[in-house]
Image 1 (cartoon, rainbow, N blue to C red):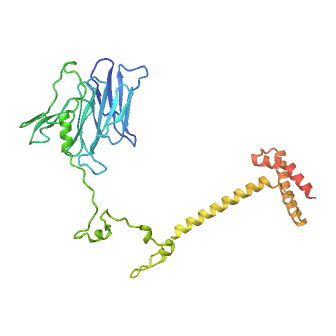
Image 2 (tube, rainbow, N blue to C red; image 1 turned 90 degrees about the horizontal axis):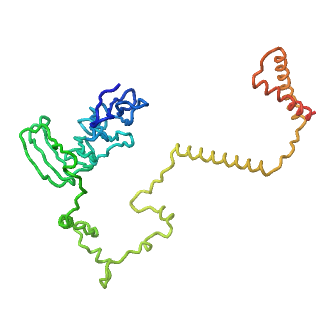
Image 3 (spheres, helix red, strand yellow; image 1 turned 135 degrees about the horizontal axis):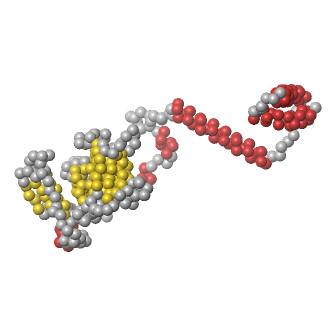
Length: 360
């Protein structure tokens, strides 16, 4: 069942966004329907998501796209006392939709469209929050009443975060909006290049890279370093690691340092032994199977010679099967319907008779 809806700005055909909350494990969704309805009587755009007890739907000024702000009362991860929020973007024609990534983890405080409908700004994250501007020239922040009853005011920043250009404090601020203007009054322009002076200041303000130096323990006099230096002062001498390496690593591993206990060799557990035994058995069985398959392909079949006792035993088994077939044929003659297993046994009668004749 629909919980809320929102009508896009603009003329015919109108666009209506309908929110359906989560129900019985199914995700929540927002569907955009045209009005008058299309021939298929169906939506033209759709976006589904979880963790959405409530939504705020914000249309672009020209109705070309919709931003959906979802929220829950409780944050299951325990990171926020105020619940969990997420943002999603949907084009009203259904050609594109996505989840809006945030530059800082935390609650979404506000999202507003650029008046030209070509971008938007998002303020989100733990304080101090990050402001992400998709496309615009200025954006503002405000502390409003009654949510915060002190330090009300607003600040205006440039699109690149520099500022504030304007900062004013007021006793009570209830809302703040850009004044609408007709299209073309403030034409768009490309992003302004950074001034060379600001780039020079930024490079000059950058701290120099730290110089990496050799570690020296506290209170060290450097006597050991002096011993390792050459007499002619040409620099430090490199140690020959091979000179001090044991000639046989296996023998060196068995030696015990005086004053220390012998190294403890970790024995495999019962589960590890069992696992290795199973793997070895499987490998052996696979090897035998492959070997038998190769022998069957390369070696000709040799006739099997049976002893009189083996012939008599095999003949009894065949006669038993023939008796069962005779009973089945008697049932068939009396009108009983035979199943597939019985029909297979009856069909095998000529083969059994031939085998019995060969044993005679």
